[in-house]
Image 1 (cartoon, rainbow, N blue to C red):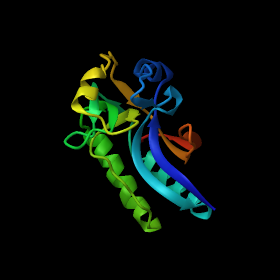
Image 2: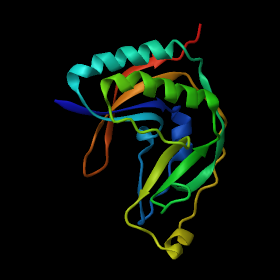
Image 3: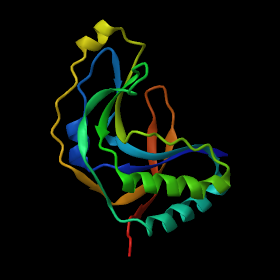
Image 4: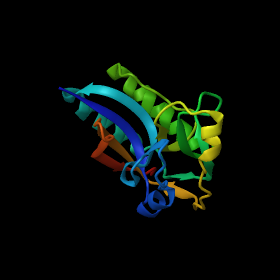
Length: 179
């Protein structure tokens, strides 16, 4: 049996609450408990391979210190393409990029579908349909004050897709701990 997996940084509870969007008929908002910063989306993985992924993440977590993230703003996304979502965007971060590249390189041996997103972000909402310019003008992006935050744990999540939205389950979590 396969499981749909991704690796991410979970967020502090207070940050999740600050990023919670008000409901809007044009949006399918992401519930606060599902907010995270994705490191890598792995796709559907055979269950027997999952312990090897645990081990790779555990080993890599010992090679990196906690990572500081600087919040920039809330945007329509993805940038430069047809907007389909609303993101909380963070500043580029070489430590994050190094971690993503290291995990992607380690997991290539499993021949996984590895998707690396260039922009560090949290997906806050998806559009229910393609929106017109007028629709976009009606949506008020919130002005949020978020402190910079330190991500100190890598989490492997399972994602179960449901009509009502995905359900995420933490499978394993490792502290970043450069010695």
